Image (cartoon, rainbow, N blue to C red; front, side, top):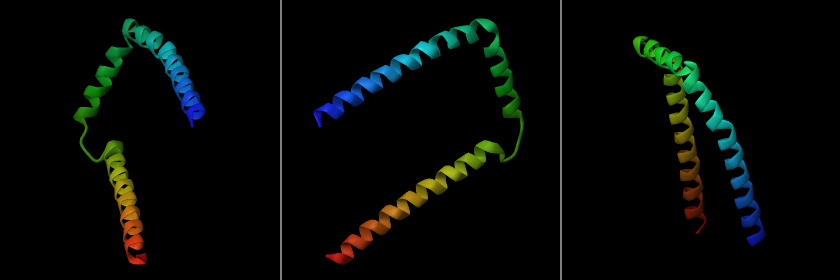
Length: 84
């Protein structure tokens, strides 16, 4: 078990280091390149629109997945109680 924990912690540290190596320079480039202004304008445009949109669909999908997992857990617990 300890070898698995060592392997997992080393892998997590390597992935974190790799992500920081990639994310920090890209963030600095975006801040100095004017990309942030484009993102702010896009966010302002999005708030003006009305309607269900993609994020509404994502919220409904997320709620459905959470409800499905809850139903599965409920059924498993219920079936275990009947066996006793």
